Image 1 (cartoon, rainbow, N blue to C red):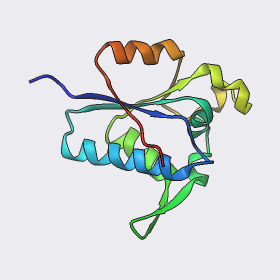
Image 2: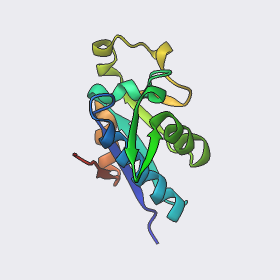
Image 3: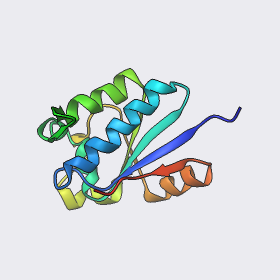
Image 4: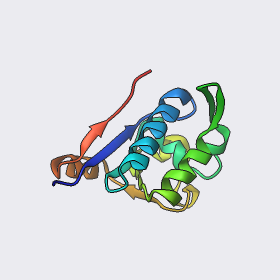
Length: 129
């Protein structure tokens, strides 16, 4: 059976926290149901801020009657499920960020890397709320 491979594409952070929370919740559920599924995130645009140290802890939303902290979800995804967060380097200067600002485990990549992942068979997932 072919391995299931997905890439969540996030282009929002603080301005649209529900999109972030919902996508991370979906990814967490997918990994909980099928640990063999390969699931990662590609951050671009405003979404690169999610990989800046301390920012994810400031992003919250109420979902299913509970306060959700993006930093906690990010930690669960990376530490418990091994999900990678690829950060498009082209957007860092727009948000006053450098490589030194990134959380542990975030990997700087070019936008062409997203193209490579898609050509390699990753299924793109995105949610617009």
